[in-house]
Image (cartoon, rainbow, N blue to C red; front, side, top):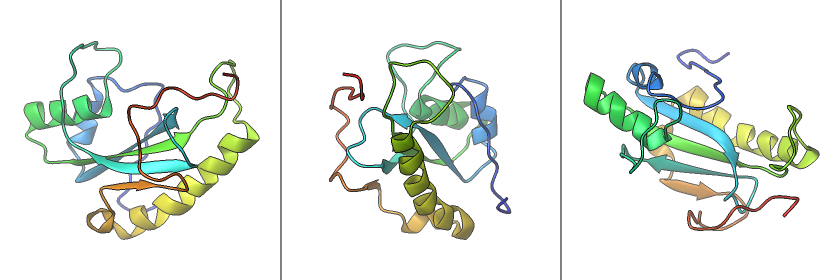
Length: 143
């Protein structure tokens, strides 16, 4: 437990998450990533609206935009994308590779959370994979 840090786990983001986001100075959205070259990437995101909208699933950028528009929040947003390995199988157990990548991501993010050092974090970090490339296609262990 880290003082001043709130942790919430959800299957997907919804519009209701904007209220919780608005209560914080910074928010980290962590999720499995299909576009991670290395164990993880960490990047700052800006509020943004998407072309489509569903109250059942929204992007981190859309949640930030809703927090801004509805609550006048100035919350900074970050995405911690942790490389996924097996997306084609249904289960609630992490693969060995995913568990190792999660450990790397936790080692990276804990000092930032403990010290509230988000102002010192680069806008984008990719571990062992060079710069993050959003245009890359899904890569799975079964593809």
